Image (tube, rainbow, N blue to C red):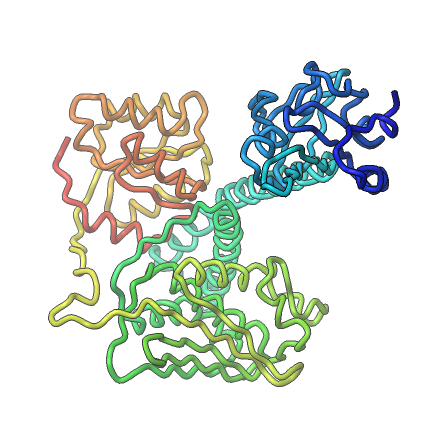
Length: 515
């Protein structure tokens, strides 16, 4: 008996219905109220890998094929979508299922199981249409793997790029602290610091795009004055703006406007917008930044008289790696990730960002809207209390397998008045901690012989080790890395290349007792 002639007596219209199923570009079969297969088309045989038995309890509901959920969990035949449609009398459309064929191969399909009801509403059968999506799933998995590999690559790239930056930054600070004189030396230092800062920002942006893509950015929200955030952003972007000869005008409200936001991340948003204007505005241009209340929202605008944006590009301007102008004349425009990062961070704050431009040569404006505005409170502190910047001298152990980074950091700390010792692997670090008895340890994570996490744990186990200030100094800076540092026993986590002023402030604020 063939599939075309194996008819189950339901209605006179069955022949026409089954002819229609034969023309479908998908597998299809019907069952009676007991789940016995009454009909199947040729594509069903292709999907199953063999023809099932008609009107047989052996192939009840869906044939004697092994069924699985998309996560690999086995599905009993009486729990498949056809069985549920017959039992519940409900439609189950677009439900994913995996079929294992007699040869062991598996196909993934979208099941569309729909019951037949008689005039009294009773279920007397059902039809299931299975759309083979195996190739689509393979492509999706390949894309997912490629995306994960891309994010891992970006994280590794950022980490590797940070290592050579650390001794460069330390060397610059040493030159300044050692009193290297002369206009040429001063200009060279300023130039290298600008380029170093630019590279650090690029690396941070690469990492942040990766973090946002993987949903690993956690906002540390607090009550902040938007004017303070704007000031942070302006200070971050000042060098780039001044180097391009631009004028910057900032307009703030007469009264403080407080928002519930992550101060660092929001400042990063505004700094990226200012940097974008500076890059895409010819030398000597104008940049205006304004903050204004609009009802219960606050609007932050960054406007310039630069190259502008083609109108057809406005909808995609916030896409990752998108650049409005890829010409050689604008080859210093960056990687095309800054605006994507802006959009991601603004959306995480529950806000929105919009790009406006009348076309090339007309300038551009970016407007951030934030809704999480809160009323000011009397006597509420606007910032952290200043730390004690006393010149306390510490014994500091520096551990880094990058010899240049360790030595240059040691030189810089000695110029600050501290006593230092450098070692270059984890086992030597533990030994030095026992003999040198440091107040502070600056410890890299990726070390030979013993990694930084394990070295930290062993240092804590040494007598008096509970009093030592352990600072992870590493190129790994994602939230997960910081959690690992905390779990291992580190007090602080600093990212290479460490900002000398930030390290100086941190050391100045410590209250360390002799070990």
